[in-house]
Length: 364
Image 1 (spheres, helix red, strand yellow):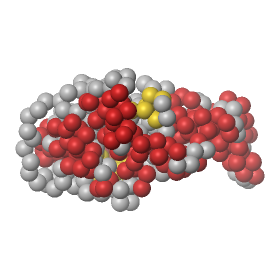
Image 2: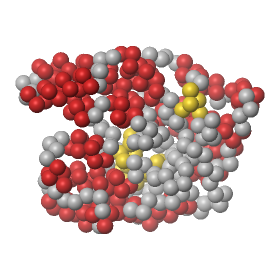
Image 3: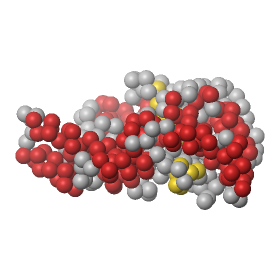
């Protein structure tokens, strides 16, 4: 197994990406305010990676949308792998995700921070800029669109042109975003999304590497559509076109298959639990698992588990990275990140990732 992975119930999991031994330089620690230059410096000095080229443009756009920029080191209570950017009107925090073992050249995803982990908003900064412009353009608010395009500058012009959404003749914004950006939907309209592509589309590794949410999405489609389908036809607003889409969904997704939903949920739990987009228990219930997976991980992070891995010939660095991934999973179950920070940082030190260890522990 490649260094950076871990195992759930004997199966490979995508908790950590291929190993990358980061530079050993000591970062400069200082309190960061809320300007874009401070975020750029923080990413270089503390997160020990290259900042996205168009991050300053994104920060300006978030400000135009009325989202105050927050210090990058204000991570208290969050999963320790995020770099906060701004706070939305609903109170949610938009952030960058710093994968601890990211290979060279891999973009940092844009995520929404949640108690139990993160929700993927875009695979990189440029994609999120694209998404913001599309969403605002769909509102037909010329003034706000112009302000956002001005803030985005060439970063926006390179990814989207005003009026493209209307010109596409796609009536549903979620469907447009899925077709153009392969985004994860926050409130999926099951029959419309599935009419275009089945839930299995989401689970292709090249679309959302490292994230468990696509597998949860697939499991939910397989399990829940059979409950939604009858209610949908009882609606007075149903038209012939939408009926045909619903029927197509029913046939193409093979929905209502409990065993398939169970298997999809179990597949989701091979990914980091903090990428599920919901509580661990919600997915474990679909998988028909109780506490056996939690108990398995607790055994793996124990001293006895370490000794078993050593007997199997596993390298110490690999054991440490696996343990860090397991501890992040355990922390996500209740969202108690602070209880695990010291242990997680120590694992990264043992694996030789000293910069990541300091990043995990950093707080303004």
